[in-house]
Image (cartoon, rainbow, N blue to C red; front, top):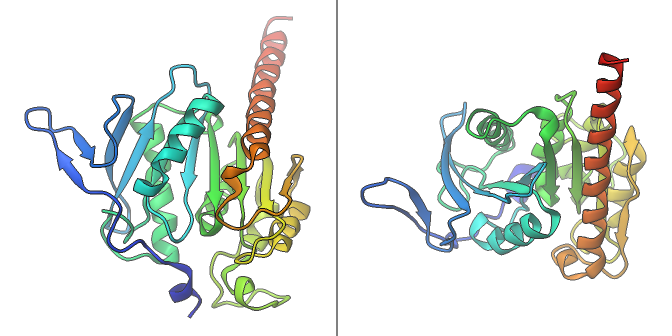
Length: 270
């Protein structure tokens, strides 16, 4: 029951796919920019997912973005471009199985395989290390984000945008975790080793702000959260403090990288 209520892929998808004659390069109907790669990725569960990689030549870090339950990457593309530009990051956004032009059906286990395929692409295709990557999970996307983050020890950072404690807790105020629940974020977030930024609207009528606040309390490495006053579930990007706070977080994370690198150099060369 919880799984059926969690996924609402846009129907029809917001974009189409085409292959360029001669080069074989993939194109999305909503994307015509040269700094964007369109990819098809095979998952370990046998589905093929579509992803876009937005490149910024000034980027030091890369966001791996897991979107919410009622969108696909065609609808998210403008935001991806804005985030890449203003945060000076590369960004890989992907569609879950059964979303957009990705094959298969959306299930909890499939989304875990989906994000693993996207993460593997960043390593194998773009040569990124674990510490170069920030995982970003919006709403239901907080599920695959925290599942992967809980298993990576050198991940740079995590951003949780209107996250859920678990699928069942969105519908019912349960106090314990049941075996049939999905996206048990409340149990996984204490395992995350890196800095975590939580962003949530105080007027969210889909996922109450208490979800974000409880997850933040359970973080090992808390970063100053952003509670967007009056913000709802799908409009936080419209508030100026959203981009401002994200930029502050990215700069802080970048600075911590340089500090640790310089410390290592000093240790190697006393």
